[in-house]
Length: 220
Ligand SMILES: *Cc1c(COP(=O)(O)O)cnc(C)c1O
Image (cartoon, rainbow, N blue to C red):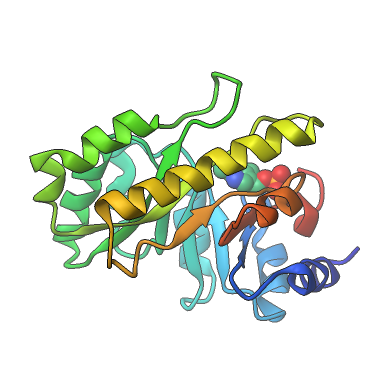
């Protein structure tokens, strides 16, 4: 399937509450241009160097999402333009993002990443850790970041019941945090979950941001 057909095919399946993000990591700029031609403006990368290169060469109305593990010393390279940082899993990282955002005179939207998968290789907070973070004075003094929701990756398995349970766990975490810490904050609204192999399941649990790469661009 062409890149354009794949995008149209996925878009047709989405409810109005869910948005597609094209995960372009490892794919060439020419592929991104093809997706861009269909009207796609949200792209995601997981390496700072690859992201800054693509940002420099490609149209400036692209909204760049960062979905990788972000090192504090590299935030400065993306702080002026990044649209949303999905994988924040520590107060230390939030403090560092806040500092670079302040230098650039902007507020950087972030998502808290949660550990929902069985595998212990995946990064992320537990609910208790997130609550501790959100209650801390240090977090509450940060003026240049805004938490827009949560992000997670389910286990990589064919066991649909397990993936389903993991996405539901993230949806429950979202609700809990929304009620406890973000009541009345309309910007806290994103549930970033679902990739090529599991986005249909994620949609059933209320995903608002789908991060899809290989179904659009082909095998990596
Ligand atoms: C690579 C990646 C995706 C997209 O994966 P596909 O299987 O290509 O759809 C989504 N989320 C994260 C965090 C990723 O690293």
